[in-house]
Length: 452
Image (tube, rainbow, N blue to C red):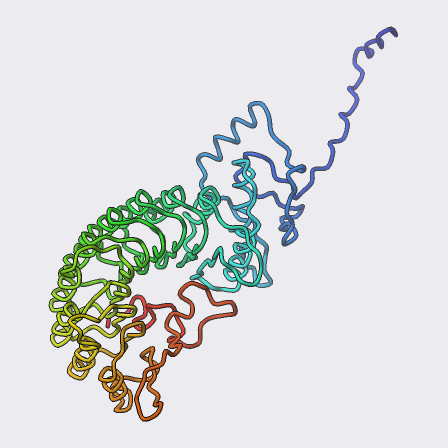
């Protein structure tokens, strides 16, 4: 072991400290609630993703202070660039916040969500102030990673302070009741969200209850789609109770949710007083009994509700008995424009098609009803003649129904046609916006935010 170096002579100057290693200007540090800038205030190169290996953790008192700063800051300060006219423009706000949040929570980045947020950032930079995030899990062109409840939690953390988006389409993912909890928290924020699509996301009764209760005080959401989530009768009762309080929701889709007789009757009862809802879908409930109590209550509702424009009652098992009540209500109703009674059983008392003939006669008297869809019922010759007359006289436009008359050996028949109203019901449009309203998904006749 060598001898220690002698101390410097008294009065000598201390040697200068060694030069610091240059810091990577694009490095993310754990706990910092901001994005680091390159020298001179310029932004990191667009699209640069910092690998996990480049993240430098902080330690000691500095890490503690940075963590406390982050807890007080819910949004990250965006990196900006100086434009040609001196205007500061945000660069990569959503995607950078999402990446930073994943690093903070030690969660894996969902590449599908990151890609959608990058596209949203580009739209915002191009001047769009109302953006809809389409994150469907059933993309037909490219394989995508379905969003889980944990992924949706991180996404909601990013969106909850952003006022640039007005729609969120999460159809065919797997957010479950966990994601429904965070969706309810998102609805409780004062955002500009007007459209929320959660169809087929494995949400059950508990998740349905959370979302319904979140809408008690929500004043912005206009259109909610819960299609295919098995909230059952109990969950349907929570949504019916919500419609007694909510005064902003205009369209509600609860098709294929396994609603029960009690909840269907509850919706019919509530809609006699609710004057805001313009469209409701309660297709394919799980009904019991042979007296068609739900159909009778829906008919009574139509006699008193003069704001409802669309009613979807597919697969309700309505017979001629229930159809008679519906037709009587249509003689008095002056607001309904869209009636979907597809896939019904109208055979009873050996009178084939009488209910459909009564419906055609009601349409002759009700001049407001413009769209009617009847495919899947039992058509006798009288039914075929009645609807052929409606089409030929111009009372029923060919684009506003799902049947078309044709003649074989001197007898009139009805064939099914693709009317397009459910063209994008389960799939989002692949390229651009929908040019034809009739090709939209279900509720396209009365735009959101416009009273009939």
